[in-house]
Length: 125
Image (cartoon, rainbow, N blue to C red; front, top):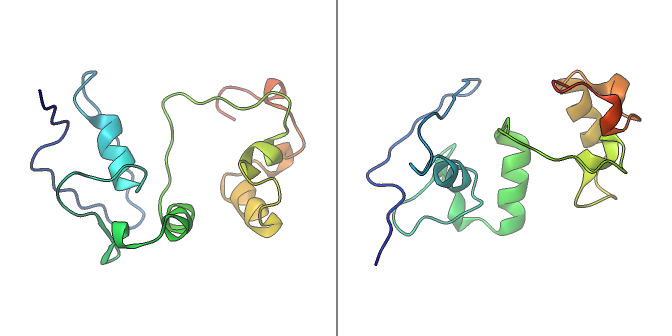
């Protein structure tokens, strides 16, 4: 038995555009997002970001591409309660680029919370 989560999908998202993916459970939303982000490889077809087939890139370069070009707001997430906001951002590499972490905190307007723990934040933060 073969399961096809996505069929004949074409998506174009412009720089700065905000997109929400909605639908009933089991329709392939998570699969679509994982493929668009280069987390899962499609069995057929290609994914281009800025004209580059992302699956021709190494895993490391796809990670950098996600960091620089793609933003996700997850439906549900889990922060590690024993780590500060900054430490949660730096996962899985606690020795990641400090300048990048600060830029991200500033972009998200949460720099003032960088030393806070998850239980000190509101749901929106």
